[in-house]
Amino acid sequence: IEQTFVMVKPDGVQRGLMGEIISRFERKGLKLVAARLMQVSRELAEAHYAEHRERPFFSELVQFITSSPVLAMVWEGENAVAVARSLMGKTNPAEAAPGTIRGDFGLTIGMNVVHGSDSPESAAREIQLWFDGETLRYDKSVEVWIR
Ligand code: GTP
Ligand code: MG
Image (tube, rainbow, N blue to C red):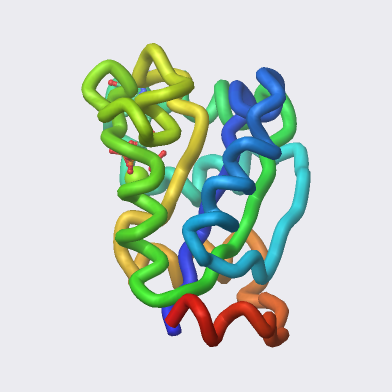
């Protein structure tokens, strides 16, 4: 069963969208197996976005992610990585379809409300980085109606 790392970014927390976003993942049928509201350090932000280190927007991105708390989460389920990305919509909210999180709540690429791992390999790396790889194992009786 797949896991993915999802984060409500500082703009999403400040705008009161945590409940809305959690609700969308829950209703989809994914299971929350880790969550932490936290202030991100510069070190963690730079490690998380290491692949973008050479991009022109890197310092702006690190500045943004460390500017206010984020809600870090791990969601589990069949194809969790791809499903989470489809719930989120395209990176640029201007291009994201209505009905997706970024399509419904975002306006600019610099503040696109959520992050989700882009592959199972990225998910494993990010869950290790943000949660030391520690997630909960528990059953929900409704699962028999989901998978
Ligand atoms: P994440 O889930 O946040 O990783 O987004 P993504 O995988 O859809 O996009 P990508 O990994 O390519 O970019 C990471 C993040 O960098 C984006 O979510 C944006 O917040 C930010 N970003 C990407 N391109 C730009 C840009 O041109 N300008 C600015 N300011 N931020 C950007
Ligand atoms: Mg990415």
